[in-house]
Image (cartoon, rainbow, N blue to C red; front, top):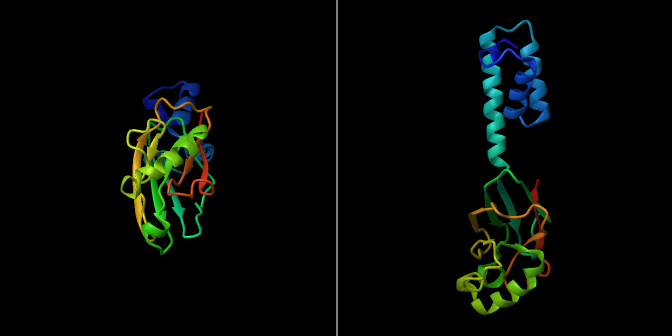
Length: 190
């Protein structure tokens, strides 16, 4: 483990560094295998570990970005979306794989606590399409996208700081009549 000797010679500290840099168990094993290998030069070992580090950082960044697709049959392609509690912000990408216009089969993505879904959807109907069927200033709404039609896409980035990982969160489409069918769980993994 000569590479980590630059930082520390203590074996346990070296393992702690590996665990912090590589949250994925399989990557940790790869690093330990690389470090143990006798047929590699120190430079080759360092390059291999740097590549794994970049891969690890990229994977962590993608954990905070979600994509969900809606269709003309009033369905989301996922029933559960989850993000680690370590995410400060989440980016949600909504795609509409159908062909119908947003006036006939529009979809959006709304996040709230489970107990507020029906009330938000009911209040949103009077807000109208130009407000994405969300009542102005509705504090029960944690995040929402614009309504899109077939072939459309939109995204939103929102903070999950302050949200309780033990609470029940739901996502749904607030287009009139859709919320009862088009909904799922949003989980913050502690």
